[in-house]
Length: 330
Image (tube, rainbow, N blue to C red; front, top):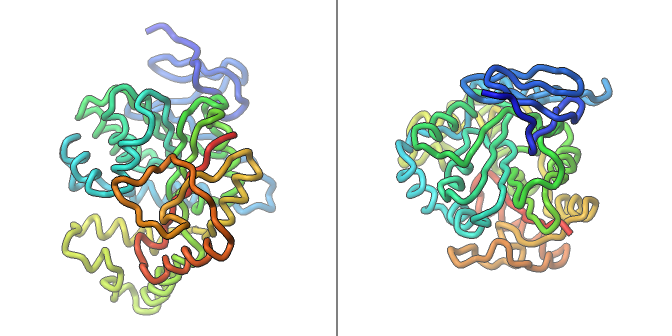
């Protein structure tokens, strides 16, 4: 196969052009070689920050290499994945409302379930990146087994993106930035990949909604993890033992996490040229239903209303205090 210059990718080390061949990927500027693993481009490049900044990237990468999350034990085919996903309102809304013809990137895609779901609409072009090769392999095997051809997985450090600026109509980053040393820096990095008029979807742990998870983590620590059934998901009969294990590890044993308010992310939007569009849970208090319009602009309400919504998350204790905010690039 003749090597070719990519129209999408750049070198994560120097931002030069990349040349893809069947055996390797070469930066034509700095001459760095990148390899493949089971067909996955390994385009990860380490951070080069000041020594004073504690970088948790390698710790997080090692954690998810050992514990890929989430797993595919319930999904044997594209049909069963879609059926399962569409029972969850958020996944169903994404699949129904994200553009059918654009380019979509999921940063920190884990095992790629969302990517595989979105790519089942064959007119979309989907990319999924993560730092964990083991997680990516699970997603890529599912993709190959189900012959999903409009999706590509690759290893990437979100602080050293391998895509040219403003390439994507939608960038998704769920449950990732709060596992980095610099969440806002990470947001700045991936926000540059969104086209003008395109959307960014950010999912984070909430400062208030995470309170009960923190309490349970403390209880588990002092009891030697003997009371794990206190977690609603682990106590449920609807999850397999392995799924319960991966949930427990992700929620309670992760080596690093931070927590963020709605106002934190709204401030990130304002600093980087984005406008608030919507959130889950909805700031106005409206229930999220199959009829909810994710990309229809809503108001961000007042500080008091935003605080009230976050305090309500404490009482619901759902999804480990996780929330999603959507912005559009001006």
